[in-house]
Amino acid sequence: MQHTNYCRQAIKQFLDPEFRHPDENVHSERMAAVEMMKAAAKFMVPDNGRLLVDEQLRGLDGVDLLCLPFPVMALEYMDLGGGKRISLAMEREADILLQHISYCKWDGEVVLLDDGKKAMVPDQWVATCLISMPRSLAATLVRDENNNAIEFRGLQFADDFETDSLLAEPAVALLSLLNALACANVRIERSEPKKNAKIKGALPFDAYHVLVVDTHRRAPGGEGKGGSHRSPREHLRRGHIRRLQSGKRVWVNATIVAAGRGGGVVRKDYSVKAA
Image 1 (cartoon, rainbow, N blue to C red):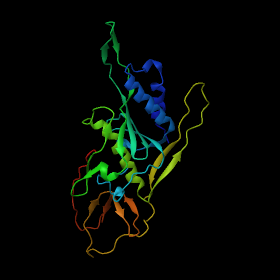
Image 2 (spheres, rainbow, N blue to C red; image 1 turned 120 degrees about the horizontal axis):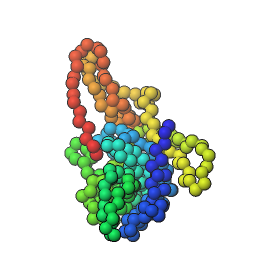
Image 3 (spheres, rainbow, N blue to C red; image 1 turned 180 degrees about the vertical axis):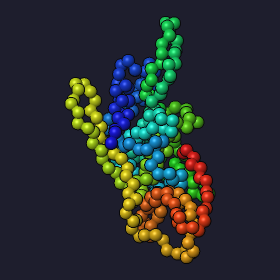
Image 4 (spheres, rainbow, N blue to C red; image 1 turned 120 degrees about the vertical axis):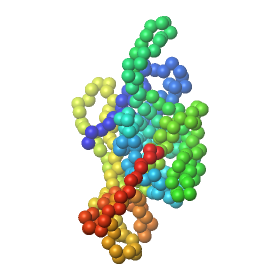
């Protein structure tokens, strides 16, 4: 498994005097990010930070207080445009402290320095301000009448950036991961770094955690009974979270139901919206 090593790259740059930001507030935010990344359990998650396509976040139904599997976590992934992203989360007594870090490519943009000279803006990691999210899910997640998760409230930012959707990204990524972990057939596996010769002064490589969905075993409790005895027509069943009689939740992958049975085809088009 190829490790992303985004935290390692971001820490190295944030500690580099050449990249020190002149604004002390921005510098403090970067140093806070460094401390969280150093302490964090690192996760590699799929593109856009979503393991399961579940807009309703049904795995979190009935959850009153959010709890992280590790005190501090770093979620590394690529956005839909191929950009590098890190979402940081640290559990505290009443809230979860969040921060988002993205790798910005400036494509050769040039700026004018104070001495009148021109300089090319280097590609670099950029950290948002610290964000506080209540651990109470009811105070954080707003659902519509169909139980769809539609927006977040209660997010408090260190600066006045409430309208910036990027600042809600770590909350979205974290809740998506916790939603997956609520399923009984999703487990955490640890991936150790490759052992290379140590280079003096180099940062150590990180071990990573990955989420694995076990869809090969039949879920305990089996399929629900009932329904029509007629053979169903061929149709696509979207991936979804199923609640078993035992109360456990499991993720069921998308599948073609009644493929090739000759009973006709039901055609549906689904639109997946980015959270």
